[in-house]
Length: 339
Image 1 (cartoon, rainbow, N blue to C red):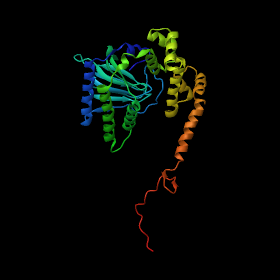
Image 2 (image 1 turned 90 degrees about the vertical axis):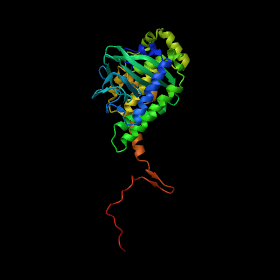
Image 3 (image 1 turned 30 degrees about the horizontal axis):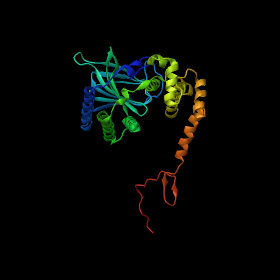
Image 4 (image 1 turned 60 degrees about the vertical axis):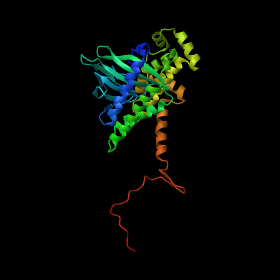
């Protein structure tokens, strides 16, 4: 939901009240019933090059979940657009650039329910129309989610399954979506949400880095200005709490983003450098080698070698032999031969 140059909303938004939580539970209950009856609409953008900079668009390291409540959201992607309406679900895969333009009828204001994923932390917030056509955070809750990997695996599986074809596609999508919505519903019901009272500048700094890592101008000074403190104070606090320098953390998050691109796209090394927030591809290569003990090109070659090695492994393991074939289908016209 956050866009470059507008990071303040995440930290200025109010925490959810008991009434907000009740509304959120009701919203999840309603969409779960729709999915159970096969009456829910799921929207997922088609395949695009992930982790690339597109004009007026932004992307996230992890999937983003939207549930339309009232009004509409017009999503724009590099190669397509679609509209999300009330009681419809949208899942944007990690790294997919997008832009949001919202609207609503005169008698009912715009409102969406949005889920974001951080380190062992899940955020759920209501979005409203902060200025004409633009959404922003109204109220937000951060939940401790030690099982965050389960949420992410379900979200990734939904995105992958949506892009496939098969006789059981609808059934698989229904099961995955119900599981994800059920986890959201449970955490609203049982989560403490205590992170709001003790979110701290360290957590805010981490959120900001993950939201803005592709911005080559992102630095400790900029983050400190957003958080309303001095750069020296923030650097000292961050190092005290995490045992890691903030400058190193920024580099590490950018390298994490570049690794995602190296593993899942055919972008050039220079394109990946720019998309990961590095203004100079040569500097990117040096930083990458400092973190991974190899160059980006060497890392990509290693990935390809690993894939080929996996292909060369036995397909079936028996107690007395290894079978390296994929199996041979029986011939339809095969008949027993006479002696």
